[in-house]
Amino acid sequence: MIAKQREERLRLQLIEDSKRIEKEVAAHKENLFLESQRADSWLTEQQQEIDGHVRAQDVERAIETALDNPVDYEFAIDLVIYSKK
Image (cartoon, rainbow, N blue to C red; front, side, top):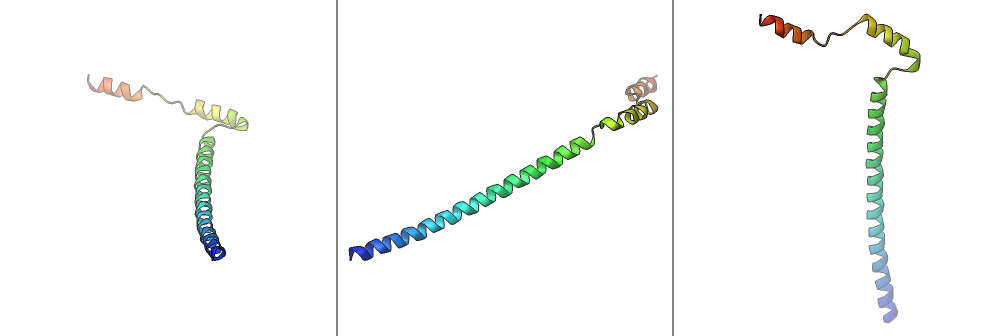
């Protein structure tokens, strides 16, 4: 009688442990997936940031382009001042 009760208790405990482990594994997989998505997102951001930088082999060309295309940041200010006169 006691042996049967112990077997039943152990069987129920095994079922509960199996369910708990399955939930923990599923939660761990979800965390890994989310972490992977965050890493991919970070990597994409870093790649986009790097694309805007000038590489060492392109420095001379970037300087020439900047010198050939000057930007006057006071242009808009000048227009406002002259339009009031």
